[in-house]
Image (cartoon, rainbow, N blue to C red; front, side, top):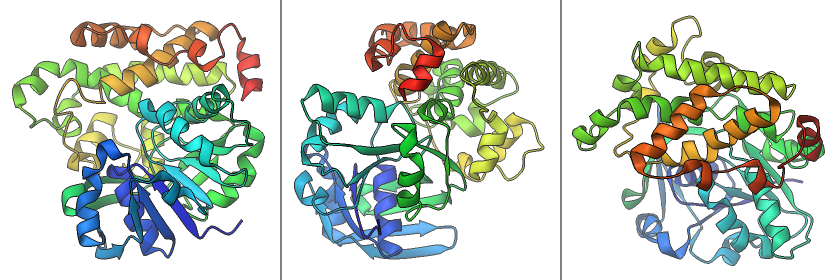
Length: 364
């Protein structure tokens, strides 16, 4: 398949950046946002496109279709790319699945949270039996921040390496050939368990953010996790969760990258020789990122509910202790007065409860 047209669903940081980047590289881009978030499109509609700022300079790229009409965005697109939060997967599946043909590729570009399985599961629950070509990355293809009202995307990094897996895994090679036309950073993962365990956000965000909750409350929005929140002591919690994540990977027969290796390979760190705290504190990409500005933000909510809760459940299934992961889930729930174990992503919700590790591997 030769990719000419890409429908981008979700006009947040990733979607707006992707629209400008892919349009600038010659693709026919359609940018979609749900009617409830139509305000994200107003600046782009007014200006007619996206101003893309990169370390190499800036350039303006017209976006031919900017719409809240999903059918208009999707019809005729070879690739339908979702740049949406993990909690929105089922909602987008309900909207999108009825419109898909068996030839279109659904590409989930963002922080991995078993999105492929959840999308297909919801489509089947709706009675849709169209063959689905679907794949996901472990993280977003950009280091970026977008400003919708100004139609500006400030891209600080084109990620150098991301893991990519289809569901089922046997489709990975064919779908990688297609999506690699958009991004040359994609490498084949063993399966979606690997893309999920290579999502660095649950490892980096909730623990150190939780330990800085008082500072976040007091700062009134002027908090910078990577500059000030990753310290010689908070990094110890990050490292402890890293070790539990690596143990989960081993239990699933996966060679999962460590915290430094993963971020160096992606391009967020300029070397892999210094200690993790120093690398975060001086990263040219990470230090430009403000936040979290509130304890209600996704660094707490999404990364615990869609990330750590699943990792904890995998630990129980595989016989891998996860005391530090569990501690962050429990204290995060106490902090926000929420039961993340109840509301979060679990093996039961994925349809994998009661399976052995080998059975879970075979299921994807």
